[in-house]
Amino acid sequence: MLSSRVRLVATTAHLVHSLICSSSRSSMDLKALLSSLNDFASLSFAESWDNVGLLVEPSPPHTVNTLFLTNDLTEEVMEEALQKKADLILSYHPPIFRPMKRITWKTWKERLVIRALENRVGIYSPHTAYDAAPQGVNSWLAKGLGICTSRPIHPSKAPDYPTEGTHRVEFSVTHTQDLDKVVSALKEIAGVSVTSFSARTDDEEQTRLSLNCTQQALMQVVAFLSQNRQFYQKTEILSLEKPLLLHTGMGRLCTLDESVSLATMIERIKSHLKLSHVRLAVGIGKTLESPVKVVALCAGSGSSVLQGTDADLYLTGEMSHHDVLDAASQGISVILCEHSNTERGFLSDLRDMLGAHLENKINIILSETDRDPLHVI
Image (cartoon, rainbow, N blue to C red):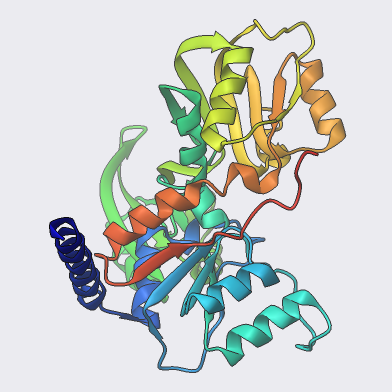
């Protein structure tokens, strides 16, 4: 009798705890949630060809209580999301990539849009923004290699220029009477900022003018300077570059603290990705006992990112037959794990990171039906 009471008390306590946790969760307005997601990993990190961000939006206002994470949004996954009362689906791969000319019941991607709108479920995709992010997919993939240092293979650039304008124009003015006239004229051009400093050339005192210009203002500045050959012949025009972002960008070049055999690296990768099989191309002149010190990796389809990178091993989801041959001919071994197998495991880490980032204001759940379409039989 006593044990029954103990079980009853324990069950009651568990139910109370669950109710407290459930009631303590609040919700977020969709726009506020999207802003927080962008703070977590800016969509500006995404590749220019990609289709990222909010892809399907229910009519506002839209409140999100449950965020549903998946690698691929298939019809099976959509059914699961609806059963679990999702308000927003974060699909790592964008289910809408190419433009749709119509929304009918004919194709599975069109049906996804219809079902999402009918059930007031938003769809958001970060894709390559999460590839490039410092805490993103490729950094997670590198965790399976062992202790190493890593850097992006193709670093991302900052979304903005460090100073106003896209170009810098510099020239010297010798005579003071010309200086005031020139500066006054340049300041009247919109999109131009002017700074000056003293300079000395061939024992002659000069004033060096430095202009930051927008693309549109540049042509007006050049037109003005071309009217005075003395200025124009000494003009330097520099194209400004956006600065590279530290730890942000496509792919990762990883240098292990201690080299290991190719066989050991294979087992580490299989363990990290929870795979029983991977595909392997051994580099020419290499064996399973050959040491691996440097690994170039890219989640998903990595050919364009990895190509030309000097490494002992390439790790990615898929590569073309000829790209594998090219790598192997250079003595670089290649491990292929199938496309989404190099990405899906990241979602568990993402759930925890987003939970902390969003201060546990909403319920975040992982899809249980999402899986790679290919498997070994």
